[in-house]
Length: 149
Image (cartoon, rainbow, N blue to C red; front, side, top):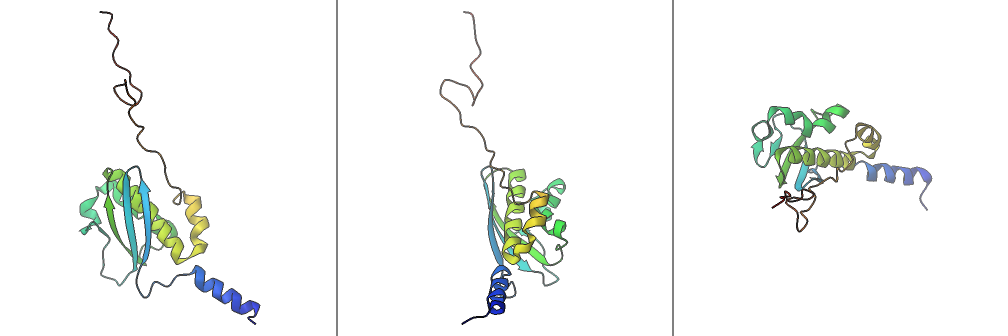
């Protein structure tokens, strides 16, 4: 028969995933962009990589802090290296998809990070996407121009 302390120890181990053996994996989405994110423990010389390129080459300067927002909000920017594969969407949607993936991967590392990430709004999946075009209209809502004759 297991004691209460043994059960509590098992729960702590279950909520705090071990990163030493490999990486933490999560998926982030935004509009049509899908990002597969892996968080590796930082060995000191690794850089953040997006689609096999350095993230400073892939994203413009304005979007670079976006994808690392979960790490910087928690003060873990030196602890993990982000490796992401992202497809679809534009650059902004891709950066936000990676941001969501990083936040979800951090939850797998430590469930206690849920409250600070939630307070920053980093765990919310932004479900807005482009509205479909309707028949008889030029765009989703734009009607054809009216002509008298």
